[in-house]
Amino acid sequence: MKNSLLASKDIMASWFRGESRPVAVRWNLTYRCNFDCRYCNLPEKADRDEELSTDKVLERLEEMGGEGVRRISFSGGEPLLREDIGEILDKAQEEGITATMNTNGTLIPHRIDDIRNADLLKVSIDGPEEVHSRYRQDFEKVMDGVETAREEGIPVTLATTFTEANVDHLEEMVEIAQEHGTMIAIQRASDLYENFGEAQEILPSQEKADEGMEKVMELKRENPGVIRNSMRHLRLIKDYPDHEQVSCTAGKLFYMVMPDGALRPCDRIPAQQELPNIEDKSFGEAYRELDRVECYGCPFCGSMELNYLYNLEVDVISDLLKFLRTGGNRVET
Image: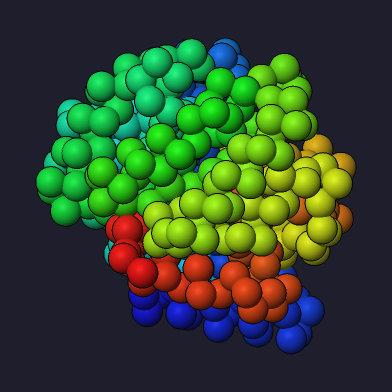
């Protein structure tokens, strides 16, 4: 919570001064994955030789701590396939950085001793078993991972990609989160610049999407402690791409590191420059070389809540502080 408050302070300082400062980073440690999900082709790009070495990752984490990074979300691919994930999480903690991780959950029981220093695990699940299996795999192993983490005292939240397969099952998703004493974030399938260009093929019709998101907003009003998204962001998902525009913090407060070390503002924005790489540059040098980008919001929950805070949208602050205070564990309201 202390680190989250410091991050909020840095965000406000950046807003008042009109300057860039690295507060949050998403680090895709690998393209490797033990899943073959329909809406992702990242494993096709996987090459262990192109991943940053353990020593380089640890060195750059130290630099990030010195540059004021408050929060890192380690992702992939599947970050639990990195043999050094325990060292990476420990180093982030040593540098005073809140370390979260995006994972499909199935490897949690096998790596539990390595991930005890994780501040939060964000596990992807797209519906009850018959729905989840349409695009992903191993529903039972995913839920075993969730329970293993919770039994070991590691906070967990769920993340759902909103598609035509689960638009009629969103209430069940909320119930799964409730059953496991946690929260759930709703994301809308969207194209990424390098690895996916078929979002429209797996999205529901606009009519079904409107119905589904209206139901989610109703559930949010009934039990706001379960759904991670702010009401403002749920409306954006419903209206996207004709949504209320919000100035984005990509390249200002938020940065992405790719497995080979390339630094970019976001993976939803095509690069307009030769990207700096932290393989051969310090993190400070690299982020100062990035061009400013113009973007006005997307369906990605984590980035948008940061954007809302930066733009002083006060109606989302209570949701954000509740999430930060509880570490993702559901709270009764």
